[in-house]
Image (cartoon, rainbow, N blue to C red; front, side, top):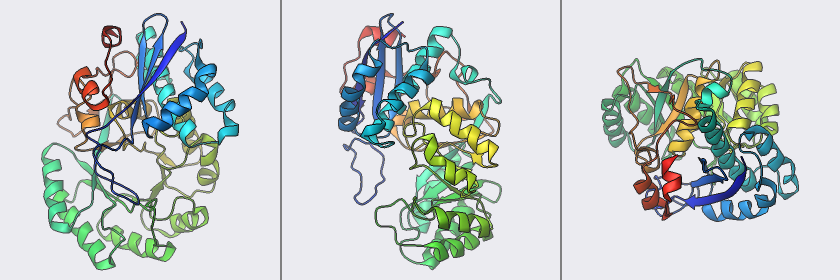
Length: 381
């Protein structure tokens, strides 16, 4: 079997609210589907956390390297793509594109062997994983209303992030967290994401430590990205002093970038994003490295249905991988699947057990959000 073509299809028209320096608009492309075609008619699907213009440019660079390659060897092929493009910059858009390719190759590998990706990764430690509902912070009252609505959907774990948190006053921060805790109840997992990878974040170590102590009063499970994402020294200091766990790592790419953070114990919880970091092959290595250094692995999942499926398989195949992020209200997660995601009575998601990523796509929705015309061949497998 050989790779014959790789196609990029940017998702537009339902891009979730969020943003860095400027608010993202629904028609902005920040997630791109990647489709790997083969000479035997088997098609694999993945996604990359970057715009389609960057993915398309990366595919032109990578084409001589992947054309004719064996899609049943995802780890070797992905490593080849990385090793031959280091001179273009290690990490960034090339790595993001390779992430989507790698996910699609694992999808093909599973389809051909009729096995779920989690089993091909070495075995399933669990068949269910707890998703935490990931929502943006608003003022206390509308935030509480939103959380109650999400709780009614069956979620038992919640992460609130960004918005006004850390950007106005300590008093407002405390009011936000109190409202959230009251809304989800005392038993639910509650996490807080400061979003310090924001383009104009202006808080530092002392704010982060003071805030971590406040969060401990509300039994917050972890404090995510409380410092700018390159400030390794302060992260180490904060993790050593914080009364609650410190999480981060979503902006890092390549396993090598994680080494000083994990060996230096800058995180209690590390959050690589499979659609950025280099794909399933790379994230598995990071998860192993985390375990060896006593750091908990929880995938970052502000992405797509394909990213969520990959996260579920990675969590299933990782000894301590019992949580995944679920971006609520995103059509790129909820609408792209033919069979809708369903929480069980315990608020858990079943890890797909079909071949490959194990999810069927709603190709009408794919066409709606990408404009890509799907061939019957791609629908049938």
